[in-house]
Length: 437
Image 1 (cartoon, helix red, strand yellow):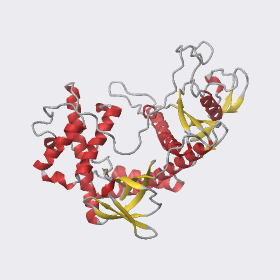
Image 2 (tube, one colour):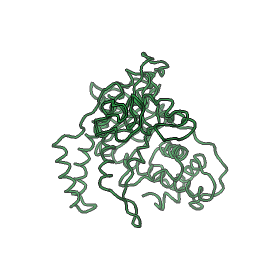
Image 3 (cartoon, helix red, strand yellow):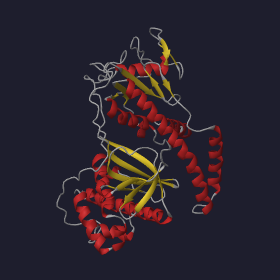
Image 4 (cartoon, rainbow, N blue to C red):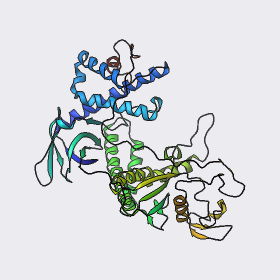
């Protein structure tokens, strides 16, 4: 089974500069290749990895500076773009901005990577064109290296190894008769149908005050100045700690839920749509923009999507099934009598049914409804309450496809006669920098 191992790198000055160069080249290749794909789609044609990789080889012969990065790193960037376009659509894939995108690149050939332990706290890895790089040996490698990804967050560089640990995914859970429903909220991050509450604060009071002062300083800084850069580094140091605490909380909660339950049921939430801005446009301005912005921050702070990812990762080793159900009316339905009434929810925490008088914690009641909805989100007529009809057949329980980490296979090659970027194709786009920003 493939699993990841992440370590913090300790690079010297030359290695850090090379990593910045590799990341910049990958970003430029990504943006140029994405523009080519969009031009082909506008013409009604298709573009894929195979012709773009051939054009990249020709571009490197014409412009030697493209050869500063390893060939397989640039090819892997094209593979990642091909996979992103197939999964999300060409026009839904984002550009990689110079200011917002964090430098990242992958070495896909595990046979060219050598990893050694040189002490109790230190190890080193030999990477193409980087040589030996040191990293903190914070955990055992535990398998054969398949690939390595180098990423910068803040002022630190990290390396993530994809390893084959020799284990097989669990086919059966140790307790096959157990199941739990999970309700994700903004007041309490995770509430289970068994009455469990999982939550914690990811930022301390002192950090919150410090962050507010730094944000005020940032507003007074001139764009592009050294002072603004120093303030941003301090802000990133605080937000990095908050991000690590959130990831740790989601990983621990997911491990607990997956270990104790054979089936974990979640609401199928469209988190990206739920956290979209309500600002509107100049012609049609939005309403309650500040309130919606506060709700968006609360949702993102609790890490709803991160919890789902952590659950699917933990489920590989425990044999747990993660099921997504329709979230409609789960917080308004009485678990005891199935009556649907928005007035039954008296407050954020109090649920009292207006029909039968059943009382329960509102989030626990919702988690029980989520558990009951697994596999059949509504009845055969779609009736969730009095005078409410919907589809005649219940919608199928959705399960999202989670791709295993590694190198995606290229998508088959059509015959392409002309590149939209001009006669020089990909090289022309990268050289002119038209899509490099």
